[in-house]
Image (cartoon, rainbow, N blue to C red):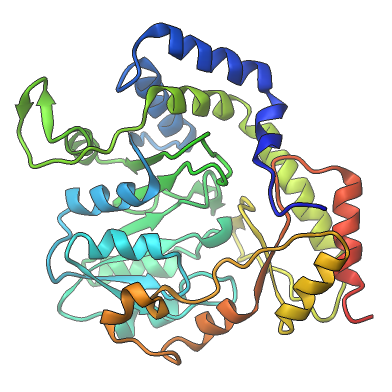
Length: 365
């Protein structure tokens, strides 16, 4: 059976280096906010470019929550988001007392920039873009709208580490951006992790205070803060993975290239790429109208698939209080009804890739 993902493959590519790093941290006796965290933050920010700064935190949700909080998003503010994004983005908004305002998706699975302006109100404070599945959002129109209406721009880059739009890394367009290092991500840790990135050093310095009980120094608390720290072992392991980023990226690019060039089923719509975008292929997502039949067909061929995500977050029971009914965002809802993720891993054999392509191409033959 070909899995949808196998996280052990990522580890095995550079097993000795990961082992050595983990042991070195264990032997150091320093496990929270030490050298590994400080160095990873510098290296990750430098890899993104444009004199960015990074503050690591314990997970992607808290990256959003703290990043919005530090930027002044609060009670009653409206934040425009895309309708088919993951619920974590919405939780980060809601937990700051703000309100997510949903915009329908475009054919690239991202927010439809042409539909944003109609959702702007006197309460709108920001647009929060998600580069879903590792596909960069078309940023030009969104940047213009934010400038025109004096709105803050945020980026959810939980799935788009080092993807680029017009040769600029996602995460460098907005005021603040948010990253997740959950194990399934392209730059995934071996546990939870996240980061806030900004070119505004003041915001990053504040995040570093907020994540550690609001402490500016030992037993000197200047804010009502949080406990949201990335630990030393995860930072160290992420440093190893960052060193080998090109290997991980090349593997995924090769898999995606074979899928895009060799899948020819008329019943399966392949992902489209916006002009100027260089996706990172966190997920390789196709659209299939007969999704249940397709997934059964693939399983019968020994191939697992997944659905990210089966419904817009506003239809989840947890967000029922928002009062948004099905039909509000038809494109996003159709996406959720038809998307299927094909296996995408840090390493796959040519035989595995060929078997998946054969499985897709034989659907309804």
